[in-house]
Structures are given as C-alpha cells and as structure tokens.
Image (cartoon, rainbow, N blue to C red; front, side, top):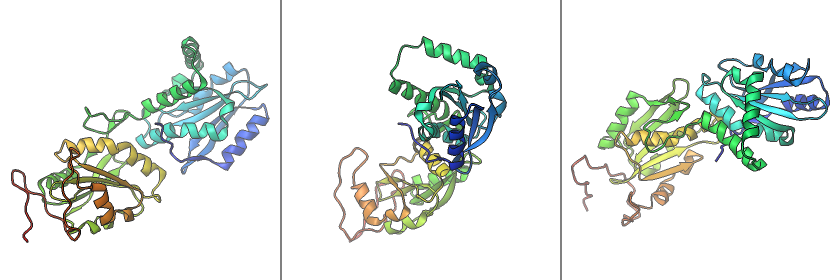
Length: 338
C-alpha cells in the first residue's frame, strides 16, 4: 500500500502550472516541498526542441536535494513528463516525503497531463541519454494497462526510498540507513525486560538518526499511561500491563507534523524487531491517535487478557487495576495476598 504524506499543492504552484498550460514558453517547472507544501522553485523556458531543452534539465538539480521537475513534451498539446529526482545522499525524511507525495502532486495538478514518468537518483539519469534509455526500456516492456503502469511506478519509487524491514533484519532501514537505539534507551529496555521498571517511552531523533529514551519508570496503575505521552508529538512505548503481558503502544497525535507522522509510521515495525532482539517481545500492540484515548478501560479492552499464543486467561476482578511487577527471570510470578 502506498502511503500519502498529506502534503498539498500550493495555490501559487497551481496558478503557475495553469499558466504554463496556457502558453508555449515554459519548458520545465521545478517543484520542491517547502513548509509541508508543494511549491514552484524554478523554471526553464522553451529555447529549442524537446531533446535540446531536456539536455539542460539536470542544471535544475542539486546533489542532495530531492525535487520534482515537470517537463513539457510538446508545444501543440499539453503532454508533460513527470520527473522525480530523489538522490541517495538526501536526508532520510526528505526521501520519504518525496516518495510518498508523487501521486498527490500528479493528481492535484491533473493526471491526464502526465503521459510519462521518469525516476532517478543521480543527475546523469536526467540527461538526454538517460531519458532515451528510459524510453527504450519502456518500449521493450510487455504491454501493460494504465493501472498496471501506475502500480509499477509507485512500487519503483517506494522500493528506492523505503526498505521495509523483514523478520530477518534487526534494524529499521530506509535506503540503507539505520536508526540505532541509543545506549540510554537500551539500558532502559534491559531494565524493562528484567522487571525493574514497567514503562519505557521512546522517541525518534530524525536529525541524528537515533531512537532515544524519553522516560522510564514504574507506573502504579493503568490510568497513568496516558499522562506519560506528549500531546503534540508521536511516541512509542512498552508497558507491562500485568506480570505476563507486555504492550507496545504507538501514539500519533493529529497535531504532530506530517514529517513526524511519516517517520514514526515508517520505523514502527523495524523498532519492534530491534527491541525483540533485546529480549522484549510485545504480546499486544495498540495504536491511538491521541494519548487521551489510552484510558485504563481502553487498555483492558485491547489486551483482552490474551497470551502471546492467543489463548485466553481468566480476567481478574474488576476492582483489580494496580500494576503487578513482573517476576524476575527464573522465578515464578508474584501472587497477590488476600
């Protein structure tokens, strides 16, 4: 499934593209994501044939900055080439944003205008020779329906921008870049695994590409869980619901930025695999939009007191809400005195 970033075409870009459709002087229009909006960043005018002008498209590109370039293919009609340039040296969050916004850009500007798409990670791929190679490849491929072509393009962009972790990987990867778990966070997770604490909150530092510890402590009851999460930023948490059940909780507030929501969503599965390698395996996974949804009743409903294998265990009395510390390794769970 292709995830969309929520970024939209700005009014200024929409106006400039409409103007380009109505005249014959614009050959190429460069588009960049600025402040979570698609904006016109640069343009080239028509000075010769398509081949002659396309040879200069690479001059609009920079080594580390992704962008889209809309290139007019003909002057008589409105047939455009959509170019998506996402260099390997770009920041991880930028790669994700541009990969997940392409479909939105073409849809809002008008899918019918874009008769071909070119994806590349180097400036050389946007030379005339690079485009001709792309055309030869397209023409030699087996005929596909328009829907099949669209799916192939989506898969191509996503496969080059987001490498989703598998069960065999131990780190979350995005184009070969790993987000390591900070040493302080690792220590907190080891303490969690041993039962020293029952709650660990983790944050993703996109700038330094690390998973950091936000807080770790022993909560006294389930009603305190919601209070540990910020209202304006996503967070991951591990929580001992009882002496046998570990919960993984992902809260993603609607007030958080588009970049943060995408970042956390992308690395969620990879983080779970990494934490499992540290000895913490969640039997229950819960996702909410707002921390206030993490009420004691909601946690109880989510857990359902099921074991990892799916077998049910009896519910304790309704009045029993206080957390019971998990038993240390090699010992039986503590029992509550009558």
